[in-house]
Amino acid sequence: MASTGVINGTNLRLYVGSTPIAYATSCTLSFSRELRETIHKDNPGSGWAESEPGQKSGTLTVEALYNEDGTSNNYETPRTLFDALDDGTELSCTVETGVSGDNIYTFSAFCTEYEVTAAVEENATYSASFTITGAVTMSTT
Image 1: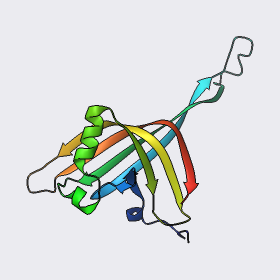
Image 2: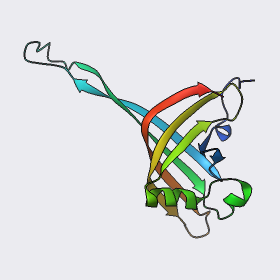
Image 3: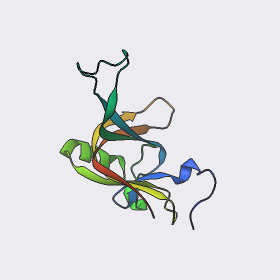
Image 4: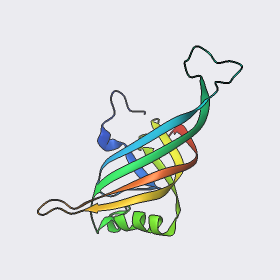
């Protein structure tokens, strides 16, 4: 049964393949659409720009606690994302709650940025950014 009401952010996760990112603390999925200017000399308009829809694109970022034990818990580890960046591997991803009937975003992406942060006496964290390639589908689980 599909979720009702406001979704708890804890439940909306990034999966690489069918495996969730371990110890994730946040993820952000962004879509945009460029506009192409259509003003021309035969239609100068009123001084206002005129536009038509152009290309769509998407990005994804994830932040997580740095860990070394993810694979033993059936989660993706920081190593998976670093290797994807290093090798230029195209990843099959979903962002979903895992609840039957809820929306699921499915897409392919390349890891384009990977960062580790380790402050004194603080949790070590990492973040990764992805650029979506090709179409994104939104369906229900």
